[in-house]
Structures are given as structure tokens and as C-alpha cells.
Length: 121
Length: 107
Image 1 (cartoon, chains in turn green, purple):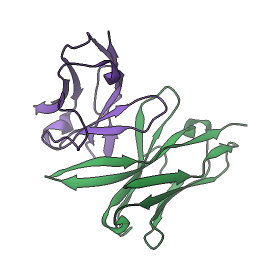
Image 2 (cartoon, helix red, strand yellow; image 1 turned 45 degrees about the horizontal axis):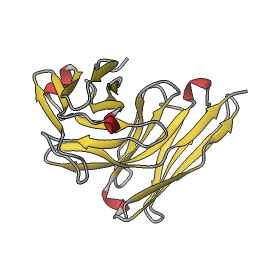
Image 3 (tube, rainbow over the protein chains, first blue to last red; image 1 turned 180 degrees about the vertical axis):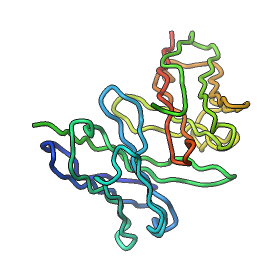
Image 4 (tube, each protein chain N blue to C red; image 1 turned 45 degrees about the vertical axis):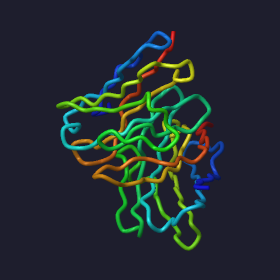
């Protein structure tokens, strides 16, 4: 079964740091680009960051660039998001997402179960 | 603000057809994918590419695009289709971006 299982998250104080992890199974992890997507309370989905299959191409949303670092370990079939200098605006459910390709298109499937990050003093 | 614009809310009578739209200049250049998101659950992809559905997605969901507007059509809406719907594509800098989302109410 194709699966993404997330861990990490929880409460953190403003200015603090947190690391999210995402363990993949059921497919060849090395073949895919991965993304982090978040949803703040009462808001819509927001793309956060992506990393190519080999880790050479990395992109960030403007809102997190310079504070968040995406990485992957292809030997462990795992994706990570290191979040530093957190603020209340980073409070959200974070999803790990595989990016699939075909027919000139790309799409997100599957999604991890989501993990809540709450930034509050 | 998102470069993909969606109506915040749409309603449809049970069994009727509803179209959810996603408007943006980059829709002319990139395919749009569509996601259904229910509270407490992870989003699910409904449509990708020209009009492809993953296995397990009912054929009442279909996608189309014309000019700067992509559409998700639900033909014969069911009660379980009540959810938030998001489009996804790329912005003018080729970064991935979601539309603001459309909340669908099935009456």
C-alpha cells in the first residue's frame, strides 16, 4: 500500500524550531518529487516547499524562505521539514505530499495524514 | 493572495450538476489539478491533466479548461460531495499554487 506517515509537530513557542518527518512506503521513494503543503486554521491550502527526487532542486514559498529547510534521505525513504524562527502565522496542519507526473501534468497524490503545528506563547 | 481565483462558496441541490471554477492567467499554460478536502481528513486528488481521474474517483467528477478558466464539474451531486474543493497549478513564477478554495454545500 502506498503510504506517507508523518511525525513531529506539536506546540512550540514563537521564535522556536520544530522538525517534521514523513516516512514513505509502498513505492520507490527515490523516483519522486515531494512537497510540504499546509493549512492554517480557517484558511485554504498553501504550498510550502518542494524537493526533487535527487534533492538537487528545492523551492520554497516566499512566506517560509530563509526559515524552513526541506530535505530528504533516500536511504531511509524519508522527507523532512526543519522549521526555524516560527511565528503564529506558521500555525497550521502540515501535509507531506508526493508529486506524481504524467501526460504533461503533475498532481499531488498521496497525502500524509497531516500534523498540527501550533505556535503560541 | 492566490493567483488562482475560486468562488468562496457554491451550493447545489442533491442530484443536480454543479461547476466549480478556477481562474488565472497561468491556467492557459499549465494543467490544473483538483482536490477534495473534508474536515479532519487529508485532501484527495480528483482530477489531473486534461481530464484524468485516479482509480476510485467516481465518474461524476470531471474537469475541463477554456482560456484562463479551469472547471471541475460534478454531475449528479451526492450528499457526500459536500466538502472544500481546491484547484492547483503554477503561478507566474512557475511556483506551485492553490486556489483559495470553494466550499460546496449540497442542499
